[in-house]
Length: 136
Image (cartoon, rainbow, N blue to C red):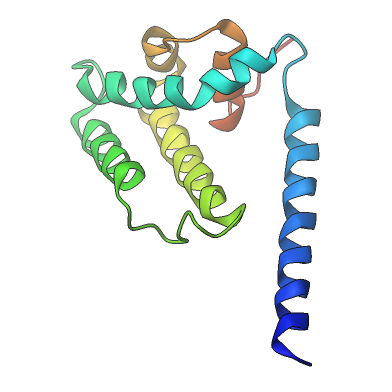
């Protein structure tokens, strides 16, 4: 197989993976989440992590991990470089989800709710990302 055929197969696979991820996220989103709120989710997440890292009520070990998370997110060095379509940002989402799950286990959902700068629908997405089951 020639190099261009391999490249085409890889790009096709990544596009298929991207489409699947978008479909799953769309299906899992809260019904009241608007497109505007979805676009604000990433900046709100960064502000949330920064606020939690400064919150004296959050255990010190959790705050240290959150500062390390911010450094990782701002660093140009990633597990998977961001120039790789879909996968470059997917590793960041996985790292943020794992960090949020650790924060919820140690500090509780109250800490996230207290520090959340965005909308209630955005908070519902973040809590779902952190593994918190929301009761309807």
